Length: 300
Image 1 (cartoon, rainbow, N blue to C red):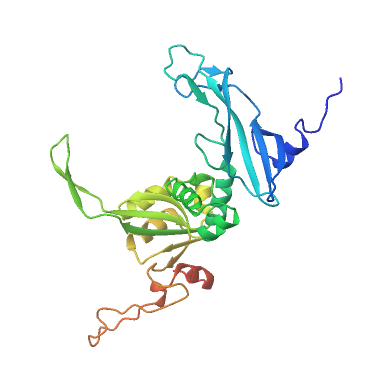
Image 2: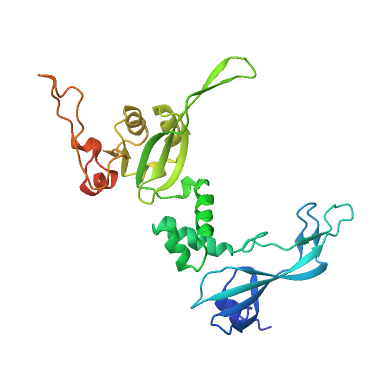
């Protein structure tokens, strides 16, 4: 028996390449551009309330979504079925088909959001320019970036060579009463953020700014992950240096302070500089910006 070895999809679906969808029609628009009409490869789907799979179609509807530009303007229309729930006891009578590329109430495809996010985060382009280049709205691109910021990545799968550690105070000191012991406890106002300084991606956030918190986060990573770290950029903090020395030895530590402007190397004024006989030489490394530390090889 001879079986075809090529793709089973039609040529239009292969070129458009929207996962889980096939092209059913393409129309040239009078004012330029094209309208691509797609439909999901499968019909059956589980009810979002009870989970019972149904293939009974109540009605067909069309939804217009934004997608990646393909050699000009493209208007994508998704033909989706409204299915009838097969479970009689389920309060939901009908529901609309959803996929990973076109979630519920989505106004654009998931691959367009991934493209927006990659252009902003990986390539450092401004949000307004990325939105204009992809033919979308500014708030769509900004909402995509905001949603990705609060989601921490799987750190163990990332190859990080330049690590940055800095503390942040995100609130005032507050106290709360422990419901078990009725004792007053202090809410920690400080947190420590660990980032990949090569891309600016946040890797982790820990409570406090002591060495135990940072060392605990570093020790949770594998030995191979820690061995890849070449440079760690921190501000002059004995707690951070202690954690790095204990967990990442040997590694180059670049002292910097984020409040200074990039490309400047300045001296810190010692509070005892005006006292005779108390002048102390302070290295300019203490206030340099971290990219300059890495670029010029400043390390401690």
